[in-house]
Image 1 (cartoon, one colour):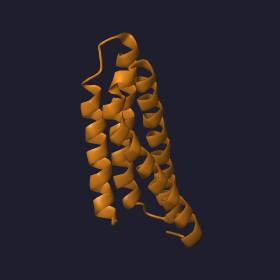
Image 2 (tube, one colour):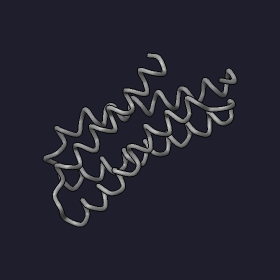
Image 3 (cartoon, helix red, strand yellow):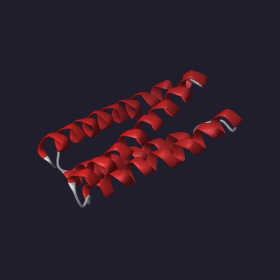
Image 4 (tube, helix red, strand yellow):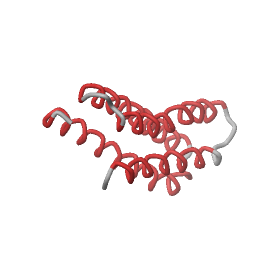
Length: 118
């Protein structure tokens, strides 16, 4: 998978997460989760794009580390939502699986960049 395909994949994943949040109830705990996800998820996609424009290997790695952190935060909130609303699990499985795959790709990219100097 090339960089442009990954950019699209991150963006599509972010959109699917945001659309899922529209299905959440309006109770305060879901509002808090929704607000966090609405910030962290698009940030993941935007920071991946920024990493692809990194000016140096350290810059590339630092930006990918932000992607890793934002992905991990989003995954936490997805788990939190499922714990509070088990009925949403079916809708969540493909989204969470994609997040896990993107996280693996990100971590692998960081390791490769450190090893090869980008």
